Amino acid sequence: MYTDKCLDCDMPLTEAQIRKGQRYCCTSHSIRFNNMMKTRGASIYSLVRILRRERDTATRLNIWTELCRVELSWNDQDAGRKTWKPAEMALADIEAMDRKPTTNLYVKGK
Image (cartoon, rainbow, N blue to C red):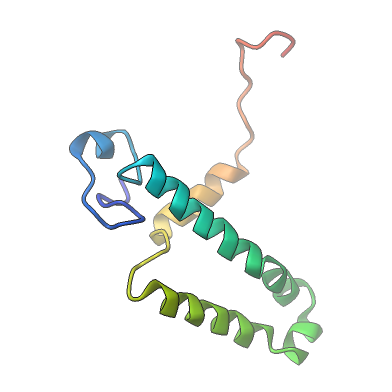
């Protein structure tokens, strides 16, 4: 298990929640945390792509500096709370997205 605390409120998870691999103490915290991550991720998606794919434009427009400015504003908004996943968890989530879905043998026509 990567964490024994709720990613949203930092409260300790129960033993049962830890055994189940849960990351949040309740559904509303899961929704709130993931919505925050989606919103923030969407706001920097194009900047990251420009940084990697249009290097001249990224340099001319100081994209890296802008990304750092946006992250700093998030840090100020979060008021000292850690609002990101641990590195190992974030990498595991990316790995899980890259895996091909398994075939469901119970669905007709598959």
